[in-house]
Amino acid sequence: MFLWHSGKKKTPPKSDEFWLSKGNFRDYEAMPGFVGYYGIPSFFYEEPVLEQTENGEKFYRVARSTIKRLLEGSPSVILIKDLSHGGANLWIDKIPEIREMAFSEGGKLLEVHDARCKQYLFVFDVLTDSFFEMIYQLINQDCRYQNIYITYLALANGIQKDADIASIKEAALLNLHIDDDHPIFIIQAVPEYPLEKISEALSTACQSEGWTFRTLCCGESQRGGHGCETGNH
Image (cartoon, rainbow, N blue to C red):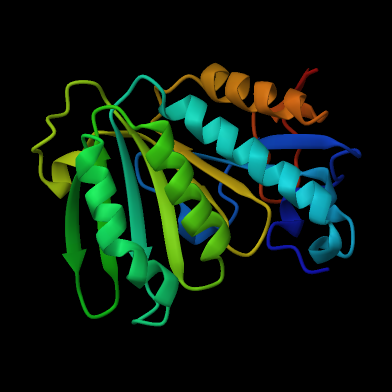
């Protein structure tokens, strides 16, 4: 099986482990001013991945729970990028309903469209569980592989709800998304954001699924040098 990050690991996680590594899963995903992390479940190294249905469901539950925990208590943005050029019928049909739901639950919608991509930013002072669960199921599950991409942003406190898109993106403390092709959880955080908070959220989510969570806290070089490893059970 071809692994994008095969040069970054010498040994895979043990069975039922979930690793959080410092770095970028793909180099082009690096964001200036942010520290990258990526989480990998052990079953990703087992073939064939596509048949790992039960573990795949566990991975998505871990990711969903972690995202919810990391967004709690801060203004939040759900950024959706539509690169389908009109091909994602389910998403397109749902836009009016989603817009209305966001407004009714205290959010607002900002839109930026160009020839390549349509962007929708749903901005909330407090993200409601109902909106999060609805949009997570729609984009991360129902619209997978349809060129619809979602990123969850936690913002610094004090950002005004009527701020423009540039101000909102500058206020981001965390950018969270699930890779569309692999069971990989991508996290980008400002340098001052505590790694302990990320680790605690992931550890709690992993425990609920019977997985052991480990943090490669010092990261690894691209050639496979190991950092210092800590475990949470």
